[in-house]
Image (cartoon, rainbow, N blue to C red; front, side, top):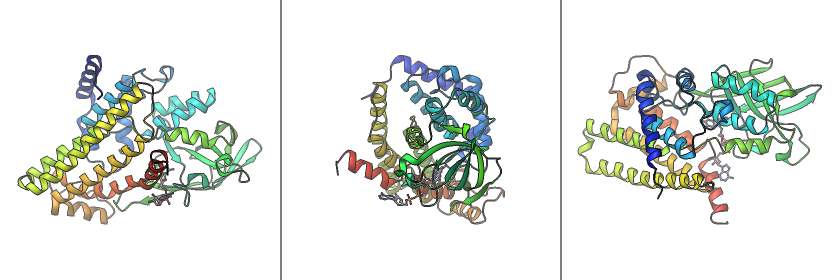
Length: 394
Ligand SMILES: Cc1cc2nc3c(=O)[nH]c(=O)nc-3n(C[C@H](O)[C@H](O)[C@H](O)COP(=O)(O)OP(=O)(O)OC[C@H]3O[C@@H](n4cnc5c(N)ncnc54)[C@H](O)[C@@H]3O)c2cc1C
């Protein structure tokens, strides 16, 4: 079993002290009330600025671009402590997803142009991978980029694009060659969203929130200098990026914070006296111990220079399932107090003052939004397919 060293524990207390002194209470409260996958742009960007000033915003970047040289264990501890303190998550789309691709495949000009602006918040990115009809089967994507002089002319549509309504840039997979095998005809393109021919349409989810969008490209002229890597190398870059989409640690601490709150709510609602209800929370917590064990085992593997391999698929599915079961129990615990939240959702959101206890304010929203976690970042079935193939050899 993995054990933290005294140096790790000293680092943990340094992070804890920093968070106690620098995480503003209103940001902590805003994070508590977030029902969506990502925090609101304003909330996340304020926290990003505080971390940038401290030099802790992008631990995994090379030092010359603003990274920290922390070990994997230190990064894990930092994520755990942020989750424990209920800090808002930073938006990973640019910082944690596009940045590694630029660092590996981008030109020096692209790095110098995009990395500092991503860090300062001057640029806000979204991810244009999925299309109508191309999600799990991503390599079938059809958005076309046809070379024309020094430009590409882009036509097609991307869907489920998180925060496209806030973003000023989108990184896209586009098809530059429809005649070769699907993976070989894909190119990775950076596209400023203010170019003529781009339209963003909102998708309002069943949780009543506006987090995802559909983005349309109609004869959009994009300079070829905005291509990352070679033409046809997009699939390799895309797969590399997906390695960074999840993880980093903190999943089990985040769930533990939620379960602790669930116990408090159960107590306040009188359910704390119900053996049956408490045993449901206990069962969740036992599953969480298993997840935590796996998270630490993976950390030990990564710290020793290895890769978690298919364990990442097990972690994804079990953390999503524990989170969804926790939100279902929270709904059960708050009972009728969830109704005003459900009503606000059915009205498409409202700024009316909240009428119930604070812990019920997000119950319906979180429960409904949380269903999406079975699908994004590689759906539950796709993860099971990976396990069937890699672990069971089926
Ligand atoms: C909240 C949210 C945010 C998102 N944000 C972004 C974003 O910012 N950028 C972006 O590019 N995309 C984004 N996505 C899209 C996400 O990546 C896709 O939804 C996901 O890849 C699944 O694709 P799909 O929706 O087309 O569903 P499909 O792939 O059509 O899957 C539908 C169902 O079929 C199952 N299925 C599919 N293939 C198999 C198979 N081979 N075997 C067994 N079952 C299978 C799936 O598990 C699922 O249950 C987001 C999605 C959500 C829900």
